[in-house]
Image (cartoon, rainbow, N blue to C red; front, top):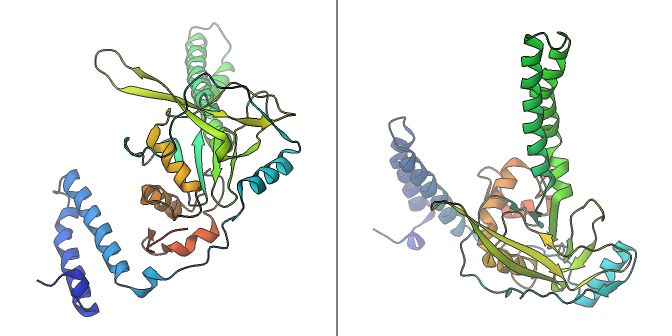
Length: 319
C-alpha cells in the first residue's frame, strides 16, 4: 500500500472513504464507548491528513493581529490602561516556578480556556464557588419552607418562596454564570501581550505584562484514604499599579501546574505559533462560537485557521 504522502488526490479520497465505511460500525448502538471514541479519534486524524495534502494548509496567513511590542512598550500601555504608574512589589518569600517546564500532565478542559486570542484562567476562590454555595443554601431553605408549610407553621403563601429557593434562584445564578466567569477570569491576551487580573471585592482589574508575573507552586492537597489530589498554586506580581490595593497572591482555579504555566508563557510568545496543546480547547470554543470567557462570540480574526464545516484547525501553524 502506498504511503499517504505518495497518494494522488483521487487515491486519497478513496482511502478516506473506505476508512469512513470501516468506522460506521463503531457508531452503531452495539459499539462500546471506547470503540466510539477510537472511531472519532481516527476520523479526526483522517481529516488532519486531508488538510496536510492541501496547499492551503501551508499557506502563511497575516499576523497583523499580533502586537509586536517590546516589554517596555507593553509596560507603558499597561500603565495607560491602569491610569497610573507601576511600583515594585515586596519580595515574595516563596520560590518562583520555571517558565519552561513542560514535563507535567497536560490539561484539556477545566478552569483553563483558550480561543487562540486569550487564555482565561479562573481565579480561586471564585464567584462560581459562591454561586454553588448560594444554590445549595437556597435549595435547603426551599425544602425547609415546604416542610414548615405542610405542618402549618407558615401560611400556604410561603410555598411560592420555597419554589423560588428550589428553582428560580439556581436558574438566575446559572443564567448569569457567564458574567460571573468574566469577573473571575485572569486573562492572558496574546494579541495585546498583556495579562488582565480578575475583579476582587476590594480591587478592580489591572493590566500587566506577563514578564512581571511569576507562578508559585503551592502544596498538593490529597483526599483521605487514597483519593484524588488537588494541586494549589498562585500568581505573584513583581510590580503592581501604585494607586491599586494589592493582595498577597492571585489564586488559580484547579491550582495549575508547571506545564500550564510553561504553556501560557509559550502562548504569550508571539515569536512562535500557538502550541498544539491548545488546539482541542480552541476547537471546542470555535464549535460553540464562544470566546475564552464564554461571554461573546469566537474571535473573528482566529476563524481563518479553522475548517468551517469540521470545526477543526486546518492550518500547519496557528498564530
